[in-house]
Image (cartoon, rainbow, N blue to C red; front, top):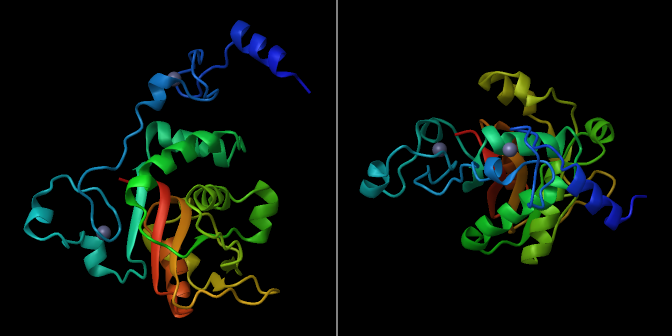
Length: 247
Ligand SMILES: [Zn+2]
Ligand SMILES: [Zn+2]
């Protein structure tokens, strides 16, 4: 194994290239994305739909009525109370998640976790347990890790909220949501989750305030299906947390 002195020397002589702009990453600890590119992450800190967290272009509707919901939330039944996301799923943030999830650079988690902590420090209300969106066991063995569990683990440790790894189980193989249309996504995840790990006793979720963690919120089909199952299991409240959200 390369020792840290040799590693530092190597980084000095041959700095790693930024995955986005391809320029050398200098004087900055993140070896994958340079400071200039990292600073382009668009945080979601303006007016949003109070239910699904979709960014609104203007604050006008919310000033008139703070509970003003986006079109989708007025049309569809949402089983979660609200969804919080750190940033918009585009450019740097989508690349960072891609490096983390598909290139399996788990060291990237450190930089994503720092963002998560900053955002949650301001917004996390009292919660009883934290549950990650589970992967199907076949997908888990392909990828080697569950990205949502790693994020959930960080939040659990940082905010001292118990982590319930077996809160949900994915019992059916589903196609990757990314390949599907909005309608297909709903169908794809319907009935895919159950409360508990099957072989173990069902964890107590009754009456609990739950934070449900996933990496990206696209249409909300996956987290809504998970929230539905948790509410059926008599969870008191489900708040969704994702690193990124489609804007
Ligand atoms: Zn760059
Ligand atoms: Zn909404």
